Length: 335
Image (cartoon, rainbow, N blue to C red; front, side, top):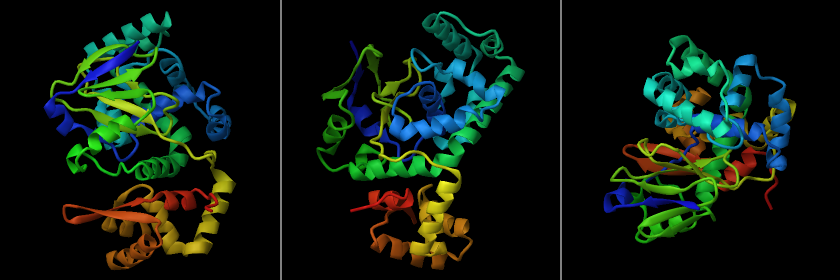
């Protein structure tokens, strides 16, 4: 079994590589991880912390996102790439036909649905509003405290694999083939077909000139995943290589933050943490509440130290962490 993704000449040019995690996909995939014991070194502490803090609305999401089988496609709208607010807004605007079809497929996969899901299937505004509030509540508890780490790990993984580029048009000759051949062991590139192996996927997906979004994910585990519906914007979500440290919050995170300040100074530590979120020099200056010229100076020092890289996009300088910068920010010892 497996899924065969068929590329045309236009699809190669239109294939994109996401440079940041998608919060709606991370919500869904972290809900899966919360209900398993997979990846204990990375996720056990996070699971213990989150399970005791979810409100009733957020807990309902667990039933809508079981760790095995199908989860509704409408939970991960393409607009989520623009941030949580846009993702939730798109979720609330899902056409009624999509809601009904996805939940019908969900019922077939799971053998049942909870009664409260009927309002969502009917497109009831109050039910959808409750779903949006549940997603926001879950994100606030389970992901927001760790989002800098999630983004830093994704950025470090991209940099380590030489994938710091958004479109294949930016890749040197032959790099597209190399990218697809090294994306994940369960993906086989046999031009012009990308084959995703595994019992969880099957059939054919013809891109038909739409291209493909390659989305690295922190909470994706073991194997890539795709949407069930063939008429939605095509995406392959694949797992990054995780560091051996767990997600942390609270006193331990505060202690590491103080150590970072002692090493770099408060301003540069603040800027390095801001770079984990991605941004331009102007945006970093605003975060650190300093002048743009001052931010530019400190960024240069951090870049010369090998902690960040800078790419020109149009007239703006965009900064991202290097693997070394991510390791330092996460408090790991570097040999």
